[in-house]
Amino acid sequence: MTKRTETGWNFDNSYARLPELFFTRINPTPVRSPKLIILNERLAVSLGLDIQALQSSDGVEVLAGNQIPEVASPLAQAYAGHQFGYFNMLGDGRADLLGEQITPQGERLDIQLKGSGRTPYSRGGDGRAALGPMLREYIISEAMHALGIPTTRSLAVVTTGQFVIREKEFPGAVMTRVAASHIRVGTYQYAAKYGTVQDLQHLADYTLERHYPEVKADENKYLGLLEAVVKHQAALIAKWQLVGFIHGVMNTDNMAISGETIDYGPCAFMDTYDPTTVFSSIDSQGRYAYGNQPNIAGWNLARFAESLLPLLHDDQEQAVMLAQDKVSAFTDLYHANWLEGMRAKLGIFSEENQDEELINDLLRLMEQYRADYTNTFRALTMSTLEETDLFESAAFTQWRELWKARLGRQQESEDASNQLMRDSNPAVIPRNHRVEAALEAAEQGDYSVMEQLLTALSNPYAYSEEQAEYCTLSESTKPYRTYCGT
Image (cartoon, rainbow, N blue to C red; front, top):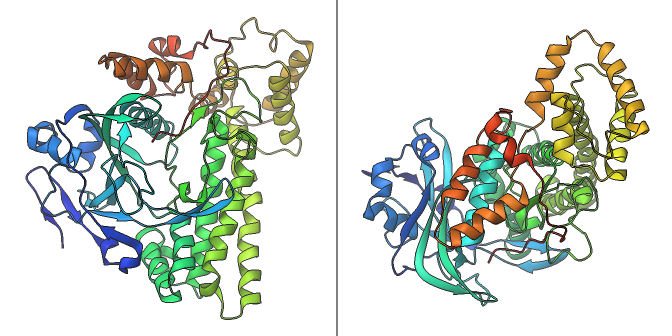
């Protein structure tokens, strides 16, 4: 049963009714002097929360982890995962799940505090988070939401009045994250390795009830679960690729069963089109490069399928065959999603066999001439081809003639094609140098740069004059590097 507080917290705690193998009950560690830095008011209203109450001293105390609503049941989740291909025991080392908010629309959403102190899964860490990485996740996750990509959301960031020590001192912060759930591929790996088959079944039944109730009546509902997760991930990764998003650390513990993007660590958006692009300072081998993301997603799904084997069939060999069949479908599903999306980015409604060749020819030219990924499609959408090496090349002129001829062979009008392109090609993305400028200003106490950036990113398909300055590229020639926020 849920019970609503004056602030609007309306928690249920269904995850806490799973076997205790999956979590440890623990309260956040209080902080010295919390201060609200940013509140996602629109999200708060959709959650059924009172904005003024959240901004009050008591409201901020909850967002910092200093006070626990009486309806909450805080816990840290246990999970495992392959990190850069190596299996490790993990878990929420710096996060507390307060509970599941039941919204006025009847949705069930996790409310998690990130940076809330040590847990049994901290593995020597301090359980805290620095302000910069928490604001970075706020900016990127909200930008992803505006782009129409399934993602966890950010409700608030508060500073703690304390410093965290990394390579130097940084202001500490706690972020409130909202998610469909925090069940990960790594949660299943943990159950398969450290629990019983009954524990695994409890987790699978819970996941079906929470995320995929439509397959509960299937003859083999656990096979239906695998199939549903494969489909959702195929759609998600295609959306990443279509906007040039690079997650940076696609470990199995960072793949959500719900199909949302989760855990924004060393993520970034690609500027110059190059499939080998890597931003993460720790990905020296390019395992999680832009062009590798679909393959890694398939690899992660294979690990999910392995965890489910005891539930798929009593006969091990038969279970493996069933799992392989569903996982092998990922490549074609991803490709179909990606191809449909790329057609839309070029204003193409119908299907022709040569479409993929046309698309790949453009991508090869973009790579050859080191063209900006987002701005190339933006220029095609606006029919404003600036003086760039790509647009001035004879090869592009030839490609453009083929593209125009392709558009001329479909029934839809030129205006309809242009509208499809405007709906499919963002005018703005969280440019890396813009994000860094916002974070640097914030660490000096100036949050106006971040607020202006968030406004520009809130409607990325608007093509407004105000967004133009956020489309410009960085003047720096230094390779951009991101780091895991800890």
